Amino acid sequence: MQENHLYEYAVIRIVPKVEREEFINVGVGIYSKSTRFINMRYYLNKEKLKAICPDCDLEEIEKNLDSFKRICKGAKNAGPIGQMDAASRFRWLTATRSSVIQTSKTHPGFSKDLQKTLDCLFEELVL
Image (cartoon, rainbow, N blue to C red; front, side):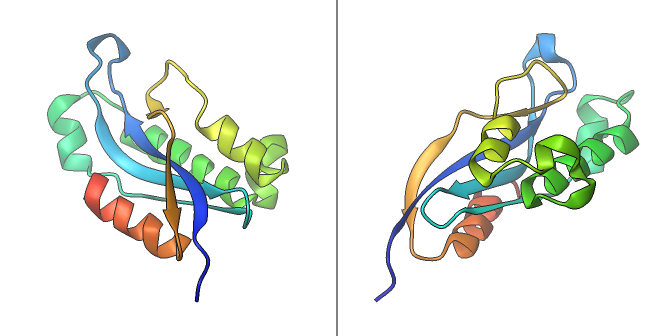
């Protein structure tokens, strides 16, 4: 029987105009300390984003989301933050910030299959 793993997740959001507090969910990041699992998925719906923010720089937003992905995976080209341990990378990615890309507060859960849980959260909260 598979073991249940405690995990944390956060929703990744695009907040085009921080002062308006409007956002679009574009991704989900997940982390489990016991398995050192960390991963994220994102999808940038460009039409939806352009509808609420016609002057936003889609290319720049996509570059930043790709950076989030590289940091999450601990890629060699993710800079010094990408070289930190999984817990530190997740904490950095989910830190409160006042920028175009933000995350929700973290939420806990239990899962027997962390990748499947990430996929389910992504489907439910983003798509």
